[in-house]
Image (spheres, rainbow, N blue to C red):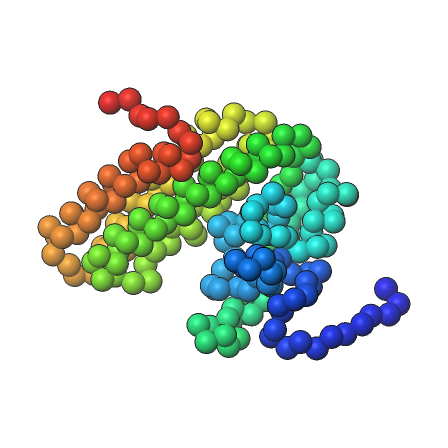
Length: 226
């Protein structure tokens, strides 16, 4: 690169796309730079960072270019995601620096993307269920579901890319995230003083949710046998 053109827009990214930033699409059809909203870039963001097939999100132009034209399915690459965590008032908070694996497939890309979407939808609903169970007990800041399930997600992602059966991977993922959700709930409640009966009731409600039909439907799984 010999020359460059600079357009100082400050924090206003609307109307133009930086080649190093992923973007999300607003309801009016405009594209906006994807900003870091938490202290960690976890696997819940993976689709929008890597896959072009994820509706409403678009990876950074440089990532799409590399994945589509240069990367082979057997390449072991990682994407570094970094930036300032923005506070609720839009002010720069802590610096966030995370790497995530880049996994691609040579064929059946739409099927691969659809299964990844199912895995993430199931995880998002389980994470919400854990948060609701803890909030019902007025316990905040104890939901570590995404952190505890991240390694397993990427292992399932690689298995899927290697040709693993989607239904079997979704079934395995469901069992894991259900167990993990209960473990996160238990660790979040074992250091606080709450009525044991209320805690037990919240735990039973969580179990019914994570093993219930809503999560299995998100993963496109058949109904469990009685």
